[in-house]
Length: 345
Image 1: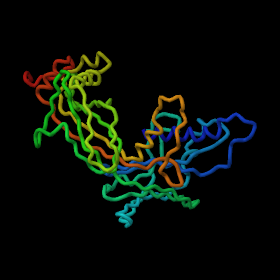
Image 2: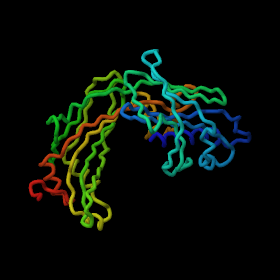
Image 3: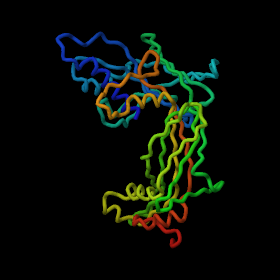
Image 4: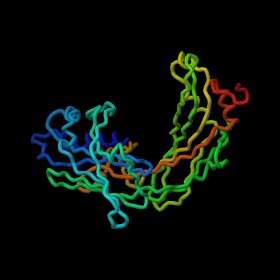
């Protein structure tokens, strides 16, 4: 999502200065405008920051976008995360460049992209009691770009409740009964997304290998807390029978020959995954997500000082359950090769 937003912002920026049909030159003198995207999560041990520069020209803008030098600084920037306890600097975490080689095809150059990282070989643990300042200095020009954020703190999930200390399980009746999902909002959190991850084992008839596979149900509406103070009870619910519709849609192969070659499948776990984003990220999404209005002009938002883009935080909480015997029996009736635990040899 961040890559898509960055691409949109870059295209919008250059379009603003090149799309007017006038008799005078609209190409102004070049200005160094730094574009920054970073999303910190204390669950992660490696952290990434995407740093680009805006570009301007009088030729084909898409051609510029496909040229790496148009959007990437040719010199190495001095990039660091500064960790603060109130106003006291605790430590500085340097970031170095690395190259990813799997960027998807799009308007901007691919598959190689240069990004800044805290390092792939050493774990960097962030503390949610501290604030973090991203500091970027261009040694060639002395330009300084910065942003400071707080991390989203941990939060608690109320429903579905754990029904066993070590081996909790969950039941989905194949009927129109409701399944509640409830949690308390996180401090520094604002926007919440729910996903269900169903994991199962799969074996084909022509192989002895048993493969673990997962499918994701992510069609739930976003929820927002009233503020970022934490402790607000947030709720959503769905019909239990929709779980089986989801499995029916996501699990089978579209290739009938491949599907008919399945020996068996075995249901294993269902994870309730709640991702919460900070207020900065929520504001950004509000302004740049698609609108139903015929007015397409969005106000500009950035929390990058002396630059453009977004520096924000998020947190991911997961509650895992085994699939109950009753639900496994119901799955075995879907004609998807799921085993019935009461008849399994």
